[in-house]
Structures are given as C-alpha cells and as structure tokens.
Length: 361
Image (cartoon, rainbow, N blue to C red; front, side):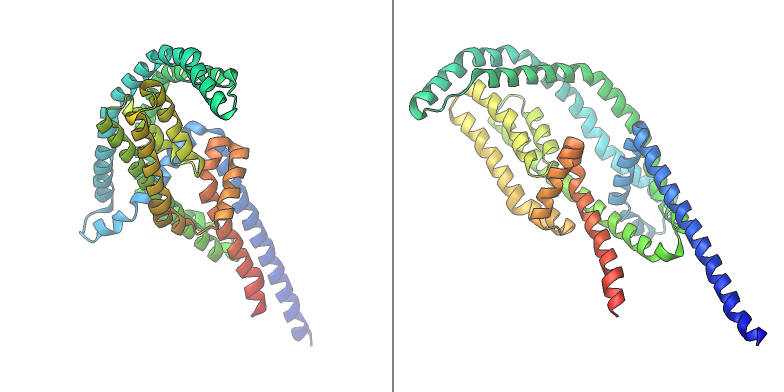
C-alpha cells in the first residue's frame, strides 16, 4: 500500500519540479529578450547598423546554399558575397554622393527665385483663381511653407558632413555585422533556441522562421519597388532636361517606402519647382504625367504583385496600421507599420490555433 501511495506523490513532486524549471526558463528567456531589446533601443549607433545588417542578411542568405552546392567553404562564400554586394552598392554611392551634394547646393541658391515667385507670381495666379472659381488662397500658408522648406534645406546642407561621417561609420560596421550574421546565423539561432522554454519552443521556432522570411521578402520587394520608381522618375526627368532631376528621383525612391502617403510626398517638390521654373507649359505637364504614370505602375502592377502578396494583409488593416504607426513613431512608424502588422497577424494566428483549434480536437 505504501508503495502504491508513494507513486502519485513522486509524480506530483516531479511535475512540480518540472513546472518550476519551465517557469524559471521562461522568466530567464523573457528577461534576455527584454534586455536585448532595451540595449538596442538605447544604443542607436549600434542598433541601426546592426538592424541594417540583419535585414541585408535576410535578403542575401538565400544565396549561400547555392554557393554551398559549388563546394565553396562558407567563410569564403560569405566573403565573396560581401565583396560582390559591396562593390555594386558602394560604387554607385561614391559616384552619386558628389552629384547630390552639388544639386543640393544649387537648389539652395535657387531659393531667391522661388521667393520671387511667392511674392509676385503666386499672388497673380491666386487672383486669377479667385476671379474664376471664388476660391481664395491665403498668402501666409505658402509663405510659411516656403520658410519651413528653406530652413530644412539649410539644415540639410549643414548636416551633409555629419551624414557623410555617419555613412562612413555604417560602411565599416554594416559589413562587419553582416559577415557574422551570414556566417554564424545558424549558431546564433540555435543559441537563442537553446534558452527557449520547451512549452514555447516549437511555436517560437516557427514564428521566428516565418517572421524572418516575411520580413526579408518584404524588404526586398520594397527595395525593388523603390528602385524601379526612382529609376523611372530619374531617367524621365533627365531626358526632359528638368533641373535637379537626380534629387527628385532620389526623393521619389525614398518616399516610396512610406505606404500610401509616400508617392504624394515624393512628387510634390518636383511639381512645385517645375511650376515655378517652367510655368504652365509642356515641361510642367510632362513632369506631372511622368509622376502619374510611375505611380500608376506602382499601385496597379508593382505593389499588388511584389508587396501585398507577401504581407497578406487586408487593405483596411494596412491603412489602420499605417495611421497608428505615424501617430506613434512618425515617418519611421509608417515605414515599419506594415511588417509589424504582418508580425502581429502571424502571432495572433498562431495563438488562435493553439487556443481554439487545438482545444477543439
């Protein structure tokens, strides 16, 4: 009888010990994650290049198995991949940066002409508009906007040396982090999984794998999308002989990363300056038509094929996530809102499966 009664007691003690161990592992795992996130949050000079390297690792890592089939050592494969990627990345930057700096300086010297338009031609056009439509345009809105843009351009010119120094720092740190992410990503993942509690091991492994895949595909798709739109705008404006064509192309490419509002923000500076420079004429309408065609190609072809299928989100969720992101983190929030919404959807889907579908079986 004593032997029979002792078995449940030992079983309870064993279960209690296992529960305490799993709880301790869960607390330790959560603490490590929070400390890692806190460290990256309060050290932007470390977290930004590391984040860029991590995203590049997600994009480039699918090439490593292909190189492995050629019987190339992994360290050598990573070095070759970094060299090729670095060459095709740094060479255009080295060629483009001086041109951008020159055009920004020219744009700053162009400010008096814009100011002259605001004080003279703008009032003429606003008077014509009021006479024909009854719509009155207030002067102070345009003047305040011009002063804001003028100040931002001055700040941008003063910030160029700091920006170049920051880019130089990133040119050193990003390849350094990227090399170890590409070479040792499996070891890092196994280390993280080794401290994951057993109760969440499978889910955590699946979620991290799916999130990395979706994030890598999304960033790659947005990069292709921004490059395509920026190239169309840059080449089109260059062919038309529009001033500051390189700046407008870069602005169009960069702002395209911002969902929905990006294309509008990207086209406004070029259209306003073209209107001031050329007036209502063939060149102005050519600039407008070029931006309209580029955005139609983006919204009708590129975005549905490349981006929307990757994130697999309802348009309403996309709009809401972008609005929330802009409210919380501004432009940065708008950029990261869609991948974060996709990650939340993935997490909620897995929790739903675990709670409801598993319980119903």
